Amino acid sequence: ATATINTNTGVISWTPGEADGPGTNTFTMIVSDGSASSTNSFNVVVTEVNQAPLLLAQTNRTIAELALLTVTNTATDGDLPANNLVYQLINPPSGANISVSGIITWTPTPAQGPGNATLTTIVSDGTASATNSFIVTVTETNQTPVLPAQADRNLAELNRLIVTNTATDVDLPANVLTYQLLNPPTNALISASGVITWIPSVVQGTSTNIFTTIVTDGAASATNSFTVTVNDSLLGQTTNITLISTGAVWSYL
Image (tube, rainbow, N blue to C red):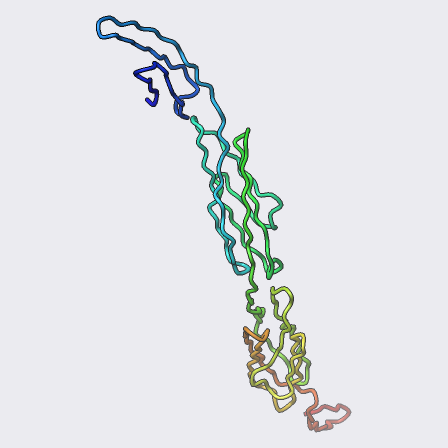
């Protein structure tokens, strides 16, 4: 379609497009002096020339840790018929992936932020390849500490209660966690590592007590609660015993 001939000199010009090759094309010319004419023909065989795939430049990005990064990094390729393109990330950060269609996905972990990561993609059509790179800045995101669920408990008065109520926190670097019991019963304590201890006194027998813990990392906090029912106990109490005699047999009331 794009072939031309100079009508004065007979010079033929043609640049075959991608759709013209590979293939054979016949050129037929006619020249006339106004009264008589002459014709000739020849074939032009167009061979395939591989076109390198093209990756567009990507802008740098900023993302918070534990957030999903999605980047469409799909290449274009001018070859007809179309070549099969294969994508690969070169030395990616842990957890980063690229799909068969050039979609990059990555969710940076707390260990990967704050920091910078370079994502370099190479795409190949089997003969030629293209590469691009961009930088992802991972910002710190504070994660709320998590307290375990605690079951309710029964305890006899004057017995020791020990409950490990230690929170987990996935932040890196690790945050300092601070524990506190809210309106605890008398003498109940919680340690710096989240261990609750309590010995209910006699006067606290036959009672129901709610233990509510709050833990904070300085920015976010978590709370849990459980109930401790204190049962009455004879330990530490005075009982009056009366002995009676009926002949040689003694008994007590």
